[in-house]
Length: 185
Image (cartoon, rainbow, N blue to C red):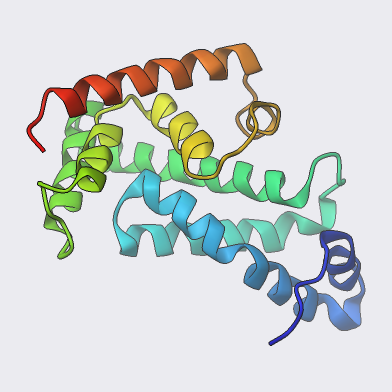
């Protein structure tokens, strides 16, 4: 198994024409699983997550040459993935001309249709609770809870102040607690 190289080495490989594809392939290998799960938590469906992830890597391929390294590569990739998720969810709303609550209900129905779904298990209750959150709170909660992303980095990904992110996370946690307490486990 190949040793994962640091981002500077991968970017250097990408920037040389003769190793561009190799560098890009290694970047994909290094980050695709983390990005997939970030996307999947937001769009829920495996197929939708794969589609969004593919769009993310297309954007990365087209724009990586212009990456200035002001932030970590990981942060830049998460920002692209988050924006692609928001675009996807917005397209779903427009496509079906439905309200945000209808989209959230649709995400909840996709979760319930999952073959592994068991409404009596706490992890499924948590997923249902997360899907009840407003979009921004859902993103903040997922980045903090699952990805353990520091608020400083999250601020760069979402272009939002750390204070606003902390408030969003606090409100999300409270809503999730209330949802779980209000359901039988």
